[in-house]
Length: 127
Image 1 (cartoon, helix red, strand yellow):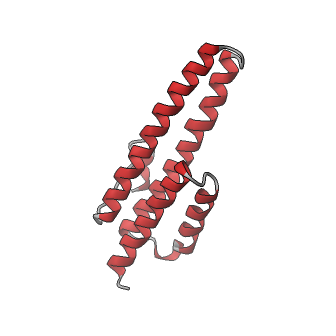
Image 2 (cartoon, helix red, strand yellow; image 1 turned 180 degrees about the vertical axis):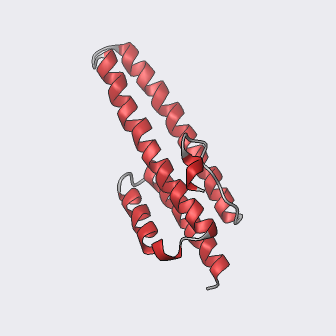
Image 3 (cartoon, one colour; image 1 turned 90 degrees about the horizontal axis):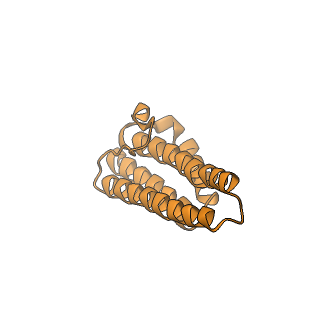
């Protein structure tokens, strides 16, 4: 396998693991993403470096946005309040959908062999 196709392959794997972390295997897919980055740490160049770092960074943001903000909403609004649950469901659905859309865009860019920067605060420093 030549370097360009390996670059693209690792980038696609990173984006797929990001989406799996959000959709099917939360936690386990993140561990696999970290393993993928560790496995390719010596050859982090070009496309695979960008997609690996961006996917890990976006996964950390996703965890913070989905777990910490959820706990803050419940902590401030109370567990029994229907308004808390209404806000929580609206927040979780919109935030989760946005993160999935970012991942689909990242996967499309990886499949095309192009770099992608997740539109999240601080993600520009990983390029």
